Image (cartoon, rainbow, N blue to C red; front, side):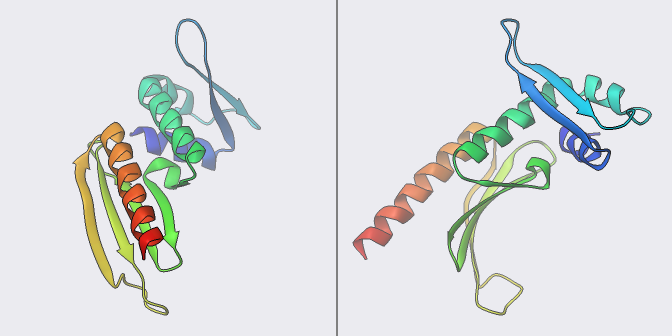
Length: 142
């Protein structure tokens, strides 16, 4: 089970997860409305470092204004009504960063531009911020 699967299961079982900073490092805490289902406590314990890292990444992206979708498997930045920048987490915890352009009424993108492929979170975030700055400058000069 991956960290995103742990978060998804906790969500389905109405378990709130959060991180509390301590001198010894971040501490994973939870609050459950009901008794934890079999195995969830063990899964969270087993994947604790990855769950903490994922919660920290999700929080960082929210602070920067990104939408966090599917428990951190996808981050979305709407450039404007017809264009989005998406960071998709792959199985190996690397990201593909892609810009999509949309045509009204069409379910598939009109265009796709790969900004970065199979990069780790810090590099994805750096490239995304650089790309968004480039787009902003380009739009201001048009």
